[in-house]
Length: 206
Image 1 (cartoon, rainbow, N blue to C red):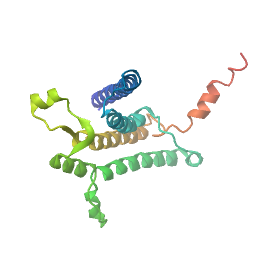
Image 2: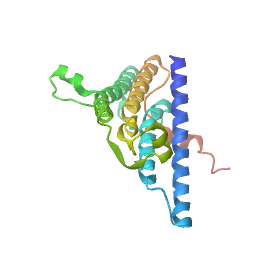
Image 3: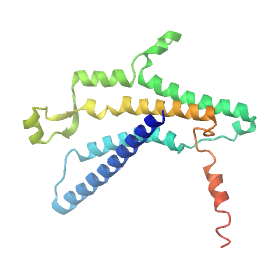
Image 4: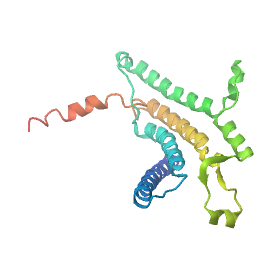
């Protein structure tokens, strides 16, 4: 389990770093091209918008890993420790249910809920249709070498939907197990403001 966690963490961190770097480089070069040379890349806006969406969905799971998601725990901290832990585990399992429902909702029909679809179904439909994005196009060299269509396919951009939700489900399961084992208190970072105040209460005195 630890080996899987290390691999997933490296994967998330590397992808997040790449996305941030790519967004910065594209935005900077686009500004220089527009104001310095009255030129620019037509697909830059759509490309950065896709990168930002990827960053959000990757950050969703990584935020669970490092405990960066904020929440309110004022009420549940009034309960005894065993009840508090049970509620914290329940919260993590709700995160798992949320991710699984968005990934593939057909299984809810077992409970009589009429629903279909999900990220996997939507992505597979985009893959079969092969429709392209609005402005993002392959370079002519890539089109000639590999015989690709002019526009980048939507399924490539939407691949983050099943991947991001699967990673989020994995991190929520991991958080639930860590809470049960006593390795972490909650899935959220609810008391970070209080901890910062406590850590820096004597700063002004110096």
